[in-house]
Image (cartoon, rainbow, N blue to C red; front, side, top):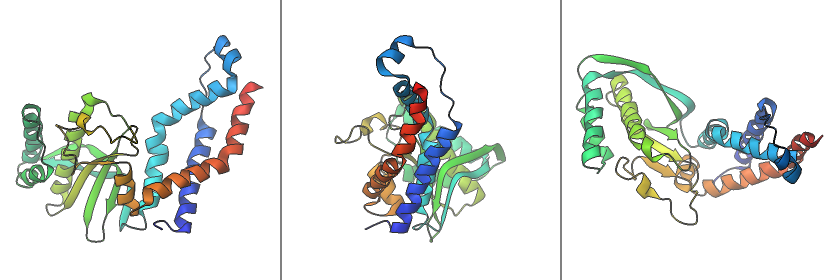
Length: 257
């Protein structure tokens, strides 16, 4: 067993609280859809609208706090919306752009070599940037830092270059603050929408080093909570859903009145 009963209870409570807060603050769309209302019922349309709204905020409202709750027993430091810093050496910033430019011509990313290049570029003026926020920050007892950017299950292919630049800039900012930092910057995708087929990594290949910069589904959650954490987390969501079902039904029934 990976998660203790206390952890499971805490995680289920985090999930329940997140959903209850969403109910409290949710404002349904007031679209008049007479045919749809009569065919499906206002409660089902309200549920559909709610799900659409929930999906857009699932990362920040549920996945981030759940990830933090899961990681707290394994890591020395855990923080959501962590501020990496707001400054980077000019030569380091230049190196980030050189890496991006080279990848557009020769798409063979190698994060270890890229980080080595950034570490060799820690000189020049210090450029101020807008403070960079990380969705999830965890640090081991040995001081190794992991900075995660949580993305949707099917990220937009046109944004991959932007994702890569963000990951490199985070590393550059961290090195500017501490030249000896042991840093890992990664994209995390909470679940695999193609399951039981493998995640379609080809969509990310070319910009991201798939081994060093990407964690999907089981690999991400098991990294945070230990082997088996992913499956136990799914059970926590199921149990939270069963517990909340009467509240969910009551909430949407009122739309038919």
